[in-house]
Image 1 (cartoon, one colour):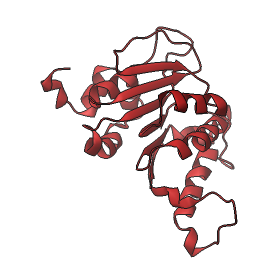
Image 2 (tube, helix red, strand yellow; image 1 turned 180 degrees about the horizontal axis):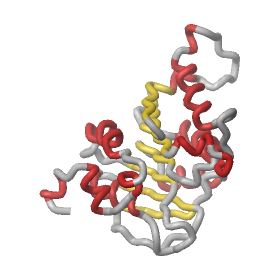
Image 3 (cartoon, one colour; image 1 turned 180 degrees about the vertical axis):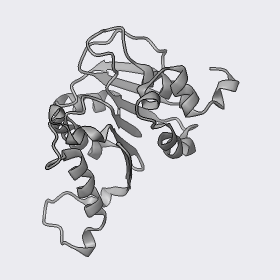
Image 4 (cartoon, helix red, strand yellow; image 1 turned 135 degrees about the vertical axis):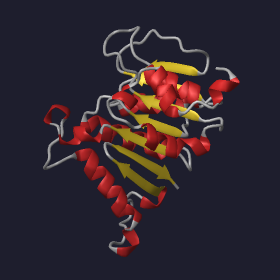
Length: 211
């Protein structure tokens, strides 16, 4: 992109590349708020879910957004389907199953560790949980883990329900962990909640910062 492009807002880039992050979900303001302060840094970013379903040459709209917004970053996109897309040398696309912890561990060994991880994958609740539990410990200190489309936590088609919205319960557990010293004593071997710096929730979207 040109120097003029450096000043483009995230909303403008989302509009240019026709991503549903803008048109369907209106995530632009929240992403801008969290990402603008680190926009110029040489980050390593992972997005789960390339899009385009089973079509090998379709998808990648948001990968192009992140490429153009973070102009000093490497962008890694993964999808369960094979993708034959070329968005330049700073964008790497891998075939990887977000519900397979071993594959995610290999991905991190090959292309990580990551500064930012964005889960815009299958939205199946168990897949979200596996991805978070596997990748969160490997996220860089000070990193940001984003989960999109939280409405699917209530959707039976995605393994969710109003009675047991797993992604929402995960967020609640992280918030409880932030305050663990006020209500419980950790047991030996229990997950250390001090790795959570902050949790920022808006409609359908959460940003989890690593301490």
